[in-house]
Length: 174
Ligand code: K1U
Ligand code: ZN
Image (cartoon, rainbow, N blue to C red):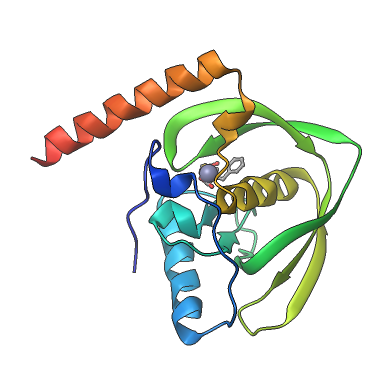
């Protein structure tokens, strides 16, 4: 089932989500809903707080090549356990901040540990877009948005735009 995505500003996007104790069938179904929501958006990642769920679950699939097999990942309690000194700048977007893109600098490579839907512990080193995306998604679990890395004035301008967008959308619905 596709879920509605929260738009910034929203207090639910600014919280630190608590860890998951057990991978239940309900959480596996939530991961499936998040993947469906992400692909439909379309996007390459999604974090549970973006659909108003206060828990440490992210999904992503950064396969971009036309005709390549998809690689959906659902990560419970993901954590960065190592990062490269080398940095990478990528123009990021966010499904909670539609149509806004800005350059953000982050570690070029990160090693992430997480629990997969079967309950198994996994570890992998990501680079390129995968590294950017997994850091962006883990940030969501800690209440951080990519605009938090921008200068305050730019962040304020974007926030004002989003307030207007939300008002316009609410008016269209009424
Ligand atoms: O977390 C999110 O809001 C999802 C976000 C992930 C992300 C994008 C770019 C850099 C870092 C993290 C998105 O998916 S925004 C949409 C997007 O990037 C995209 C949409 C369609 C095709 C390809 C990319
Ligand atoms: Zn985002």
